[in-house]
Image 1: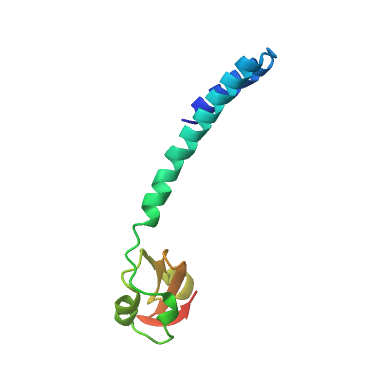
Image 2: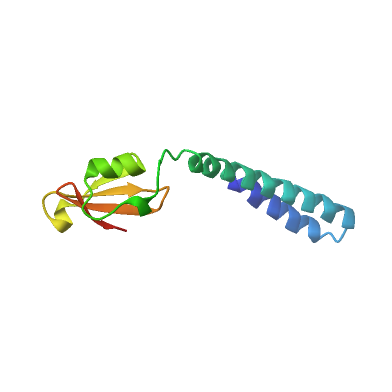
Length: 115
């Protein structure tokens, strides 16, 4: 789709060199329509993705020492669970909540840090 905007830009440049006001206006309209079509197609997935959050609560309600089930009851299922054993040792994992933009760091299923 970006090629349409590039092609419209080239057409616009060519038409502006003719110095005819009518052709410049037509070229500008073509460029504007191509640009609006490009923006419209790109904005739809972002809007749909932002409405897909299934989070119940906020990460502000999580306290150190809570169990993983307490965290899931308060905030909901995480968007991603990452194994952190390589960095922090056996029993370490992270719960990533993209809606709240936070990460809950767990060690042996207990909260150590909310980032």
